[in-house]
Amino acid sequence: MKISQLKPGYKVFEYKDSGGVVHYEVVSIRQVGKMFEVTFRSALGMASAMYPANGFIQAAA
Image (cartoon, rainbow, N blue to C red; front, side, top):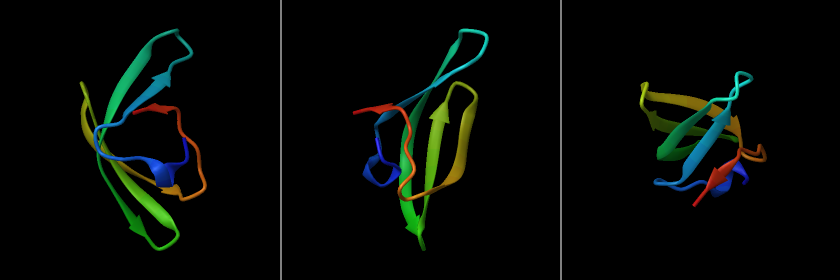
């Protein structure tokens, strides 16, 4: 899914080299110039990251 199409509530999955999977939930997304700031929540807490609008991430609605 393109970063610019993410919406709050979408689930994002990170597959680790060890075989584990970390689940994140999109809390918020906002455009900052040509980038998007995405805030995620997981069992590890909350964090934000900046992505280019045309970037892709594995997500499920």
